[in-house]
Length: 200
Image (cartoon, rainbow, N blue to C red; front, side):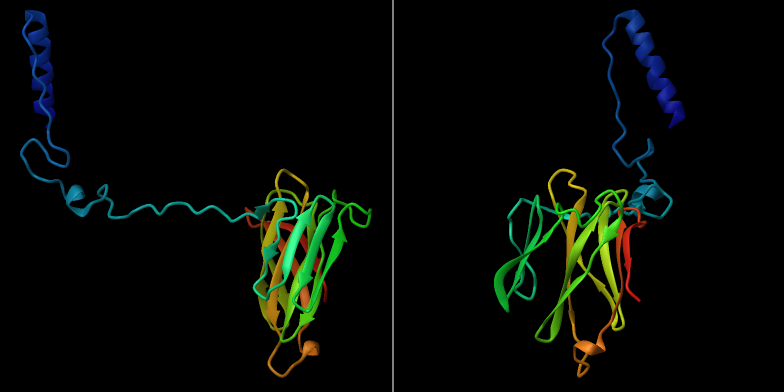
């Protein structure tokens, strides 16, 4: 192939010097000058036999408009305003509120809170997270029955806080006293701790 390239290049230069028209030659993609398909092309790879998987981005909080009600799987509703977190449950349709502007939390210091409401055979878990470094990505709640994975909500922009929520079934026959909460951990997109609440 190298010899052909040199020959074609030399022919083009000579034609240009003599004022003759030039003709280009193209070897079909995936073939050599001799018409054979290289082994790498037959395998559909670069010859290494491996393929690079696309990199996956870490999840981030769902961005919601102020007042946009998000339905939880148990029928509860959660929404955010600039003042804080609002929610209702199927058992109590009257809105409740947790403020982020009443001075009870320091948005400059990493923190996460937990509220647990017993609803029939499960708990609705939720809380605020705030003040951490980086971008909040995931939340987990460690319980005596295992680890629960929750979801994150934030307002657009950089409010410095957000809301997390999850549901967890009560242990069979254990009642509400059969489930203890051990820790709530919010991690950033790099897997580092954004905020943590130790309970036991």
